[in-house]
Length: 206
Image (tube, rainbow, N blue to C red):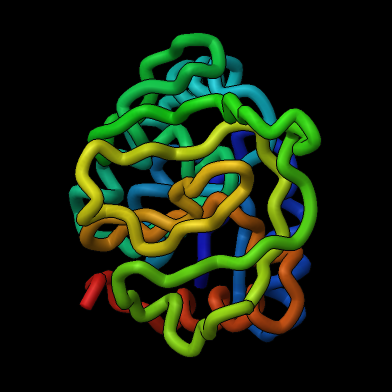
């Protein structure tokens, strides 16, 4: 059973529908204790980092997610959930969960023909092998909607990259945590394959 963290940050229902589509049992929760007891956690989200962190702190979910991580529970972060796992975000200059060292940065593109937010399909290139990225080939594309991107301090945490006016980290992680800037739940067959692999993943990056 996958526990989907509900902190009023959008795209929860689309994640739930994607899990249903591939036969993965899932439940939404706002209960910090349910997060700590979970078998596996999906930490999704779209929206503003500052308001998201405020909600997570006020509800106790911030501490619950960190506790779950240090317990070794497999966690999948998606979009905003891939950004606020870092120490700080430039979106509101807010301190975040700090599970991985680094900063979430706003796109500052020299190519003025490229629009922000980065929206649509784009290639994801695997930089470091990871069980959730098995089978991804050159040219495989996933769906993005974002104006900020995660920038880990140590490249050992960067599992995949994407180009949009610059190369940026599009998948990152550490130990039992894997996070994607793209939306697996909106990325067709390839995205659903990531969800299926996550449902069987025991939390090791190797």
